[in-house]
Length: 520
Ligand code: CLF
Ligand code: SF4
Image 1 (cartoon, rainbow, N blue to C red):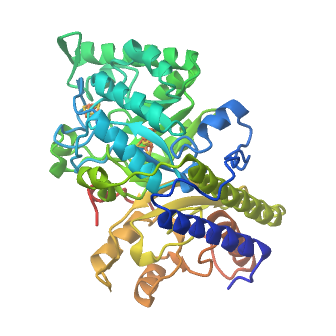
Image 2: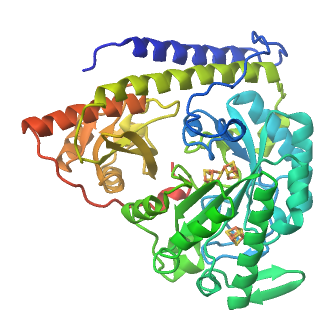
Image 3: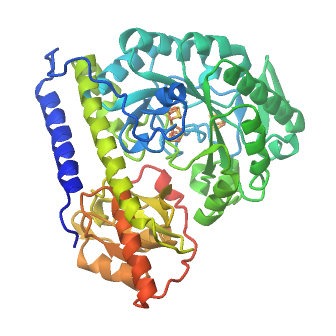
């Protein structure tokens, strides 16, 4: 049990205000005015750290470029780019691009006009949606007319939305000036190798200037174009993120070299993602039994690449028509039929007013964490451990164990709480009943964690978790994650000190392949 604090009151007040704002928004559909003064801005410094202000301005509400922002802000993708100019062994053309989307779900393809209407519809309904990305289902730059026409329409109709692009990089050098001309501030390049020998095992062919290249030659062409494109973008001040797919036995060790190569060319962020390959996806890797990494293999590689360059650890390998916070999928609310029938009311002032409330919440969260960190200041211990958290967003422990489709994973040490990833799981609670099979997969997915923080949990799963050595923690319901985790960690260290418990390392965990298809 945790005594009520001033921060809990602040948290509750901010959460109430956000709920009220959303309610008011829902009631005001069709009304072009809002209570906002129009002066509200997202200019708080919560989370800026030592980032220069001009960079912070670009990342502060981009859910992929700022880990902190992803708890609060949403992105959407529009699937306007069906064609691709290369073949990756982890991709099956029948499915969404595996670079930026989870395989197994075919997107509805949109025209640029339909895409623009969809962006306005989502922006009107989800005021914290701040970024529009084009990420497939093929390669956006293999479909340049559709991609740039969509950006042009959005620039005109929804100027507060950041534009984002994800590409395999083959055609990138030809389009850098156009990208800069449309004020696209964020570009992701998927770079899996800088050595064509490695590349030849990942890419069977690339298609460039009306010619198909294979083997070493194909991979050499691709890596040269990727490096050139990256240099050209960073020279122009465009923030670049590099996505790499970790393929054990093929490029896992080599990705350290990739990290060095992209860092030296000015990439801002490196996102190393696990290979998703199941036979049912019908990919070359899926069919030939190529495995993906375990959770600890992935974390070890990410940790070893974490130097001066930021590592992204909160990627959800989204589908090409994803909508919502990372980790939630609201795309079913915005099918073409539904958006075409929607009356759109894009109101910039009310979006800004809502986002100002989100900023208040971020400030309250940072203040709560700092206060807790002060209490941890005197602690001396080498113990480092992981905990899992069930959350619906906003940086709060606000999801029931049985309703969680994923768990966030945080690493706790005397240095504080650090977000290190997430684990997709099967829903435990199906139709009101707990599923024993699901519980087993959940335990396997968070097996490297010492505790799981939830808003609520039933007696049965609680007992099974305890049996598996994972402590279910429900005493911090609706409180901030970091603050709560640090409080719990302090208590844990205390119990170790007094001999009440003995600290032991946990085992490895499984990255669930099937959960990346359309689960529940
Ligand atoms: Fe989309 Fe990609 Fe832009 Fe984000 S996703 S185009 S940078 S707005 Fe983000 Fe999704 Fe990971 Fe991509 S979580 S797959 S990194
Ligand atoms: Fe598939 Fe994307 Fe690779 Fe093209 S770039 S083959 S769409 S994963």
